[in-house]
Image (cartoon, rainbow, N blue to C red; front, side, top):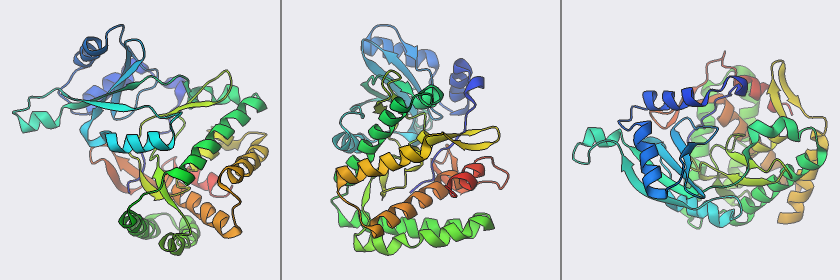
Length: 342
């Protein structure tokens, strides 16, 4: 289990070309943007255009009539099997993925090969990155409600169909959670310790099978969710590189991010946040079946654990894993202070 990449990005200062240039200069790859564009053009034809919002560990373009081509650092590669599992659980919003080998570096040179980028293609899902249109959606309750109901379907699909078939995987997840909770307790600022004590209560529920372990998107942030601005429906969930089997609820920070946003003066929930949260859980219960108080409590604990891991730990793209607790002055801890009290 790794901590997730989290990089609060002021969109009003985002520069697409600078972001792409920084990726190629900082990733250590021997491939160039021009080589990547040429591969996409040769393989799929048509015009090649960078997508409006680039990832931290990849360069992504559209090509041909309906293709997305992504060039990823090998430390952050996609697993076709995992993507297939995600597509089986969420067929409406996950695109199939095809690996096309490496670009940059010579196969005979191990050091150069390691700096090459992995190439993937997938169908181009429609919609805008949610982070770009959250403000406009917030002006319309019907649009907000459509987004929340789409998110309900996504989480209900995880609950019902995204579970591992191997009991050993559940055991592995429990052991990873135990180690992560201990690490958080030893290293997070003191004010978060009561929450860490609480989340340990989920461990017996995981061991007994009362709380499900499910396939979980490892970075379900506002940039990886695509939404149709005309109707508010979620049209895509992208970037499954960090997906793994985790306790259900570890990614519920995605719900918080549909109910509010971080502003210059701190976290702000939208006016309809309470109503939308109630609608989420009413619809979720309708889709998965009535939930007992103990199950709702375990989901609450899982949400808190997911928040602590996501916003309380740091991620190193070179190592491809969590490397330590965030600095106490890190602005990301503002999210913890705000969302843990929600």
